[in-house]
Image 1 (cartoon, rainbow, N blue to C red):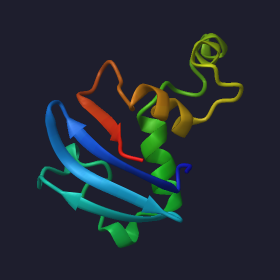
Image 2 (cartoon, rainbow, N blue to C red):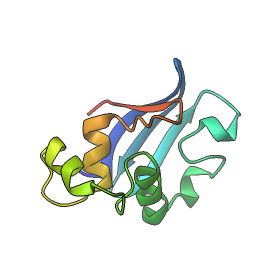
Image 3 (tube, rainbow, N blue to C red):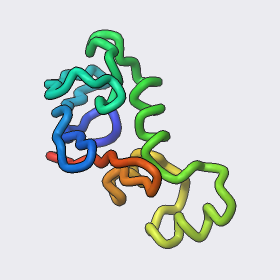
Amino acid sequence: MGRYNCKFAYYAGDKKTADVVIREGAVTSKRYTDAALDLPFGNLPDSRISRKTIDLFFDEHCVPEHRANIRQILDYYGIEKYDAYEICRLTNGVMVDTPFRIVWQD
């Protein structure tokens, strides 16, 4: 599938805030809240979400690329090379300091 071809639900805690489909880099979403901070791409209209925005979304939902001991973390996940999307697939985008998570539907 890949980062530009995937489908997921986005949650803030236990509350589903959006369903997202990305096909060939084009985003279609159904939003269940008006709270921009609880949405995967904020208040951006689907038509304005670029591939760069998609990349930034996945970057923000995983361990930073230049973190100390990143090699050990990648080894733990069984990943050869840093790839934010692949890390999000394995961790559901869960970070210690945020309530957000990705539930993959593809």
